[in-house]
Image (cartoon, rainbow over all chains, first blue to last red; front, side):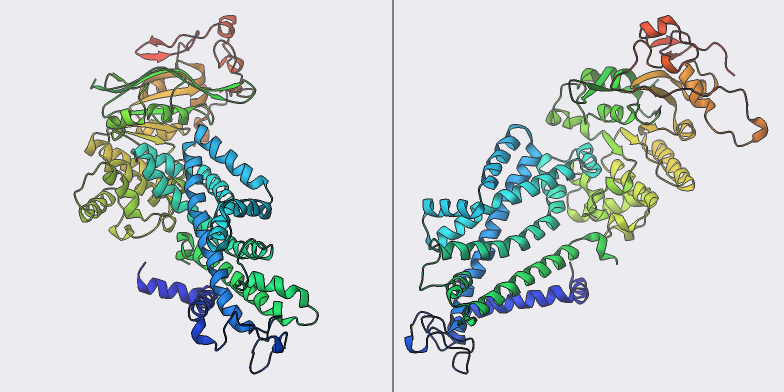
Length: 279
Length: 321
């Protein structure tokens, strides 16, 4: 894709560009957190606990007297990583297995899909708890867990797409030409799955952020005093009537990032669709 | 006659239809295609024409029967073993919109056979060759970076033909290549196929339900009914003197443009086409045939040589109309 085309696409899809900027902003804020705030995210200040937003604490303080804005910035590191990294991992795993399943068929298909069935049959939080217990908590444990919980859904959808595309006339055409199987899979079927994969990714990121917060709330994920947005919402839950700002800020942040990912996904899908290009 | 390119002997394909039933898509079909020859296959929708095309192109394994390519039995070859012949058999399709990958540029689509068989040493040479192929089928070189949906059906079929001839095949299986096109575009495509046949010595298996199209392009013609070949012979012979009653019905059903030349006495086929899941005993055409006898109900007619062509009928027509 050349530069003119990219610029034109960006002009046509202002919402997606804006979403990308929002995501970028969050990422930058998370990376440069220490330079953006004078406070330490872990240091308690009991005298100023649960104080409302004012000039010193723009978003108020939590039950430990810690600056909420500061904790938001540091929490963004965990939340963004927990949203993106495990989702990428589960996409990779799910796509590879789904493609293999749909393409190979027979016993291979049967085995992969039955494993996926088992994964999908468990309530996802329960499954996540089981895996976290087994492989241990902490950041790595949570990330691996999120990846292992979500691949099955991806594999299912990619397999369905593969089966649909495998029956299409252009795949028969490729077979009649003599194109090798692996090349058919990578050149004709995988690109056809990409729009679906983008949608799955944009749905997967927010759900991973939320699952991470549930795990952290249950004490299986991020351990206090470290924090994530999900953990902040859950900790603020107790003070919802007396100090609503504790939960409010991370809620808005999650909402913004979820929306931004969804809009960006829509835009990317349109940009990658050759049918829409000429319009 | 020139060399036999491909030969089918008793080719049969059955598809499972659930609960132990089978669809008898193609039954006991024997035919030969010679080098540089166009064999037309006509028949109604669902008579197994396309399945036959896929069987002959070695894209479907037959249930029984043998398939020979240049005298070698390739029936049980897997894809890898068949690879040495793969290049010689290419296909073009009816649905031009679906036959080209919507996510690939025209350059990449036509380059696919060239890359598969490493015809050109460099990507630049491949692009050059693609442009030449497109020119040979009457598509401008400006098409290279564009996508299939930006072209009309006729243009897309030309691109499909460019892709089919790219690997220099000996036979192209044409599965209803003009059925979805306007009549004027049909003529252009048929003429293009005719020209390519002459300049490249191509053979065609031309599948269509349109008798006039098949008559125009074919050297020989095979008539199919419910998975079986009824009649197979030179196009002129079959059109002027049909020997099988079903062929006669098909020819009679061609609309005559001039009202004064219309024959009011022609018999039209009565009744429904039987189902391929449960085909009639004996001759599959007997429920619809005015000449059917007890023998037709009981015994499958042999596909036999009669007056220089092959016919499967107990009571072939004696005189033409």
